[in-house]
Structures are given as C-alpha cells and as structure tokens.
Image (cartoon, rainbow, N blue to C red; front, side, top):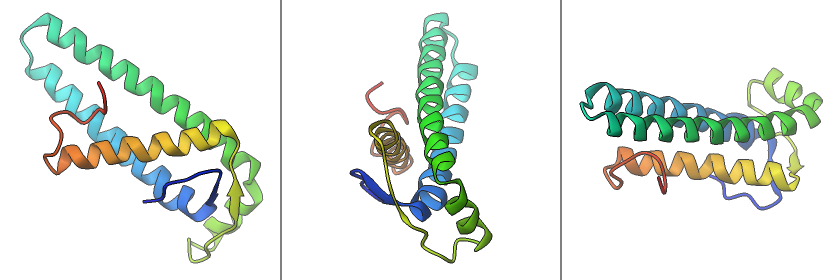
Length: 127
C-alpha cells in the first residue's frame, strides 16, 4: 500500500485506496453493529454508537476529499477506467486536504488489517 506525500498515481487512488477504504468501512461498521447487538449494557451500546458516528464522519470527510481529487482529474479517471486499470494513469498532485484524505484512508485500512490479523483488539485506530 502506498504512503503518499503530495503526489500519487491515479491508478493507486482508484484501484487501491478507494476499494480498500470501502472494505475497511464495511468491516468496521459490521463489527460495531455486531458488538452493539451483543451488548447488554446501555453505556457500552452508547459508546459504540459514538464510535460508529465518529468513524462515519471521518470516512465521509475522506470521501469528500477523494471525490474532489477525482473530479479535478475527471478526464484522466475516465481514461483509466475505460482501460480497465491496465494503464497506470498519471501521477496526480494532491492538495493538502486530498493528501490528508489519502493518508487517512491508508491508515484506516492498515488499522483494520491489523485488527483482522489479531494485532489490535478493535478495528478503529486510537478509539
């Protein structure tokens, strides 16, 4: 997985960052839903609901900035998708918010993967 600074390939964004974020989001939401369904203590349920809300807000922020990036490079994205990912696509210059969104997406995915490997007790980093 990439570790972006201010430039990244469009291919990485479209075929790694976004699909990995989607996967991580599903796992976190499913995990939190399962925990809440199994919980009997209302305080535990409330805490998990707050975690879920915070996570959804973070993912929403990331997605908004990724959408901004994809919109700025719309023609290149269309060409990349039309080539079914066989082309690497151009390197794109990220603005500060886009770079943070890519870093956050990568970090979310890495935390979830660590959770899946049993290296973390909870899929949300620092929560």
